[in-house]
Image (cartoon, rainbow over all chains, first blue to last red; front, top):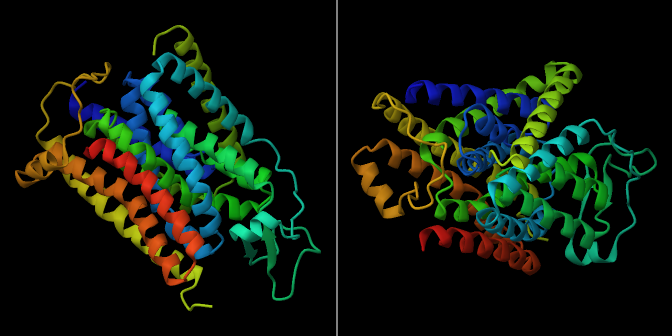
Amino acid sequence: MTLFVFTVLVFVTSLFAGLLGAMTGLGGGVVIVPALVLLFRVDMRYAMGASLVSVIATSSGAAAAYVRDGLSNIRIGMFLEIATTLGALFGAYLATRVSTHSIAIVFGIVLLYSAFASFRGRKKLEAVTKPNPLAVRLKLEGDFPSSESLPSGSMQAGGSAHYSAQRIPLGFGIMFGAGTLSGLLGIGSGAVKVLAMDQAMKLPFKVSTTTSNFMIGVTAAASAGIYLSRGYIDPGIAMPVMLGVLIGSLAGSRLLVRTPVSTLKMVFALVIVALGAEMIYNGVAGRI
Amino acid sequence: MTTYTDRAMESAIGRMLRIGVAISAGTVLIGGLIYLSSAGTAVPDRHHFTREKVVFDSFAGILRGVGSLNAASIIQLGLLLLIATPVIRVVFCVVGFARQRDCLYVTVSAIVLLILLYSLFQYGG
């Protein structure tokens, strides 16, 4: 395989990873690492470096759509970024100390969990309108401009509902974990960030997903310095992966509205389960 | 209350992020095209990680390489610009919250900025 063919194949694979990642909401980074490692036999660390770079690109590239919606909460995001960036430093430091076998096994478990989590029905949570004292002090509150996703009865005049963050120490702790996974594996770990805000802190789901997207880029940037200094980011691999995932995910978020997602999601989840099992097997067998 | 709303801050950040991604992706693309057009026939070894050979150049080295249209240097410059965008985003927040006279969130954003700079100094230092 020549360098040209290798680069083009990696680009096309990244394009599909970004496209499917955006359409199913599972993210592109989580598939591109096993794809590079298992299909192209790229070293785990170069794959993580390329994925981390693509995660920063998609997070920043998608900002336009999220800003237009006006649902992300800039204060909640910034406050929780203290936890995710510290976690990311810790995770990236761990990544340089731990064997690639163990990283592959953790990666496999995260893949299996993301496939499972994408099918777990979202519990309808009660909107918490009663102000939490710590949330008031830290200004972790906001107004939700539409009535969807909130149960009726919580609406206030003017078509907006107030929300207030709950269980802030728990959310902060989960965010540290999300950052650690991001730095350890070179992924965005958006699913864990949403879990922290949506399930732990009881924020409206749309606020959680849009704020999470804003946070992913800053979290990944905290690992990037350590990845750069250790030589994890190889320009020859990062180039096709970043461009492919970015273009794929921008296209995917446009197609999203017009395509029936359930079948696609099922297929993609099966692919992720297969990749996860393969990563764990190779990690245990010491082949990664 | 001040007139600089959260919404205005988010729009400014959204614009900055889009421009940052466009510039960095464009730079990486130009470097990539040069990289492919001058590519030899052999694929460099990526199956084995070489800790001794750090593949990312120093900032000064990258700038020198860009001057002589070295493909790898142009790609690396694009990647550094990309990594800089979220850092600039946090700077926008420090400034934005300062305009709102929100001391608490100037401090919060400054802490995040320090953590990011600490990480980047690992590379630069």
